[in-house]
Image 1 (cartoon, rainbow, N blue to C red):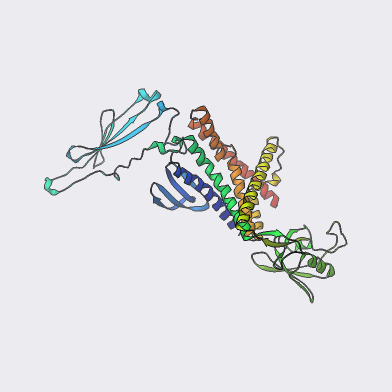
Image 2: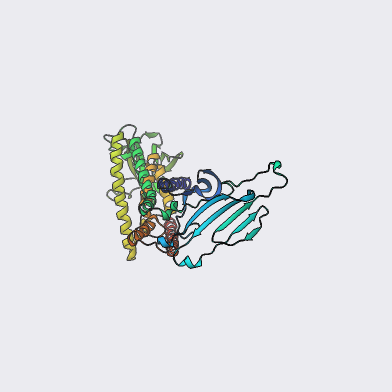
Length: 451
């Protein structure tokens, strides 16, 4: 169940991130070829206008394919100056005898000016290619008609027969630098906005908060906040986050306990077995244990079962109060995450990073399970925190991340020259490999912690 919840959280966060790229690319005039929900293999797709909305098998996120986004692709490769820029025009004219002639005129500048080549191809219905001459590529779609004109046979070439979409000004790398920057920043911006939205929901629904026993509402719940290792509670597998329903020992029973009544009950039944009924959030269970002495450092003679308890109640805010508190929480969380990641990187540079505080996929699965055990609002809070972490990490000026690509755009804006696409591809590939290696190392650390 924890893995399913983790995959669902990851799916939503990545989809929100990619939607930011998608909508801003559309609004800035870029051609978006595909918006994918999930990762390939592809199940099916729906074409709406120029964009295909694909639905894929692996539900672990999504992706956006913007035309010309990768300048090293063969689909679009703009050069660094206007002289080297390639232009293409397409015209269609009707030839004699019912033949449709499509003229594709190409002009190149720069060093390629001396290497211009052109040919004319005649394509008849049988598919035979005939080389021609001239400075223009000519595609002749020839339809032969037999018999007299009275036979009424006609043919024509339509836009569907010859689909030419060569508007290179709509490619990602051909758009203004400010437009490229907006698209690159849109993903992390959406992650921040989504986190803020989740905070607003949580504060309006009511965030579980620790309340004082003297002022607590009768609806407050007694929950386990931690379990001491090697204690009776740990041996009985009492889970963190569980709601304590009742305690039983012989003929004695305590329903709806509070921290003080729980402690008094265990102390008065120190030499007897106690049945603790609890709700883990998935089902209700009962464990049997016996209090022991020596578990509390400040009170070694006091019998205890080895749990820390907290009285939890929901504290909700008004709409406007939730907006203010969500904004404050988003800002504070971003600042705390940024400082934490900056410290981790600085410590890693001098080989002093404490990786025990870093959680990978395996560790996050456990954290998601712990959050879900405390209820929906706790899970929403955790999701908002992960969303902010993704935003900060993606802004790092590292190849293969949005921050790295944004750095390339900034360099091109200052130097007024395009970075060699081959080097961009190499840097992004190297960055991706390093990120995968880091993920493997962190995952290994997670596994070691479990052993």
